[in-house]
Length: 568
Image (cartoon, rainbow, N blue to C red):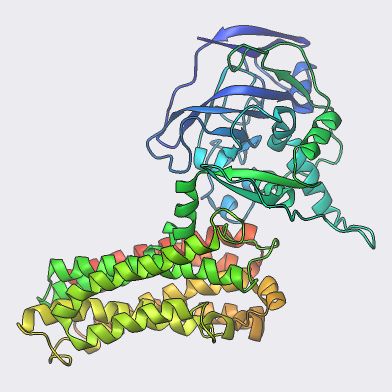
C-alpha cells in the first residue's frame, strides 16, 4: 500500500492508503514520485464543478524516478529521473500521428484524450501519490538530469511551461525589434554521461507535443506538494512554491538565460546516432531478394545473411556520415524539426562520430569480403560504390544530398542494387563454384530488377517525407533538395508517383505468370493512404515525424508481404 491524495467529497480531500500501481502492460513503467503540482483542474473537482467520484487519486503534473520497467520499454532505465506531461497518448493512432496527441483515441475507450487523475479521462490514477503508473512510457515520460536539483522548475514542464509556450505560438508571439533569444556559447561540462546543451525552446516544444490541443489562456496558480527533506519519494507535506518563483529558478539553473542542459546516457546517444528506425530501409531489399531466390530455387542462407548484415552496416554508417557532415556544413540548426542529431546537439564529439562512421564502413567492407568471394568482381564494385556513395551523400566536395541527388542515391543503392545484389549473391553461390569476374548467366534477371522497384520507391519516399518536413530549413542552409528546388507540390507529386510504382509492380508479376499471392502487398494500402493524407496536407515536424516512422513501417510490411507472395 502507499499514501495518496484522494477526493472524498466537495471541498474534502484526504491522504489515505491505496494499492500501489503495478506494470499492467509491457510498455508501462512505475515512477516513484518526488514532486507533484496542484492544478486548477484539480480545484474544479475539489470545488464540486465536476462529476468526480469519491476515491479518485488527484494529480496530473508529476515527476519522479523510474523504479519498475515493462519489457517493451526501450528508452528508459531504472533510476531515470522523469517528468510526465499531463495528458496520456499512445503516439500511433491517427490523431497522434497527425499531431493531436491531446485527442488520442487509444488511451480512453469511447473518448478522445486521456490524463492522469481527472474525471472521465481514462483509468489512470493521479500522481499526487507515492507512485505513478505511466502507460506508453517511451512517449509519456521525458527524461531529466540526474539528482534532485531544480525540482520546482522541472515540475512545471508537466503542464504550465509547455502550455505557456504553446500559448505564445498560438498568439504568434515575436520578440521586439533589437531583441533576440540568447544562445549558449559555453562549453558544457564533461562527465561519464554525455551532456547536451539545448535551448529551452526545444525542450518546451518536446513537452508541448503533448499539449497541442490545449488552448487555455488563463491558468490558476500551481501549488506543489514537495517531498520532505530526508524522507523517501512521495512523502508529502504542505510547503508550496509559486510558479513565478519556480520559473526564476528554472532560469537561474541554466548556463545563460533560457538555455538548459539535458543529460543523455552515452549508450542512448549512440543509439540516437545510429538511428535504428531507419533499418527497415536496409532490411527490406534483402527480404525481397530472399523471396525472389526462394521462388527461383537459388536461396542460399549464408550469402543472404551476409547481405543483410552488410546492408545494415552501410545504413548505419551512412547515418553517422549524415550526422557528422550535416553538422559540419551547418545544415542542422536550432530550428531543426526532425529527430535529434548528436553532433549538432553536442551529445557526442564530432571526431567520435566520424571515427564511428569509418569503423562501421570498415566492418561493412569486412563482411563484403565474403560476398566478394561468392559474387566476384561485380560485388566488389557494388560494395565499394555503396560505401563511397554513403559518404558522398552529405560529405565530400559535391554532397549528393545537397544538390538534389539524394533521391536518386536512395532509389539506386537502397532499392535497385540492394535487391538485385541480394538475389545475385545467392544465385552466384549456386550456379558457380569459382570467384566470377563477371555476372554469370541467370544471376541478374528481369524479375529481380522489377522486384527492386517497389523497395526503391518506398525507400525514396522516406527521404521525400524528410525533405518536405525540412524544406524551409534546408533552403536557409543551402541544402538544395528536390523539395527546395521545385517546391512542395513537386515533392508531393513525387511521393504519389513513387507510391504508384510500388503498387503497380505486383500486377506485373501476376501478368508474368506468378500466383495471386504476389498481390499480398496490397494489404498495406490503408496504411499507405493514411501516410499520404498527412504528406499532402502537412509540413511541420510535429505532423511528419510520426509519418517518417510510418513510412518505414510501410516499407517493412510491404517487403515482407511481397517476399512471401513471391516465395509461395
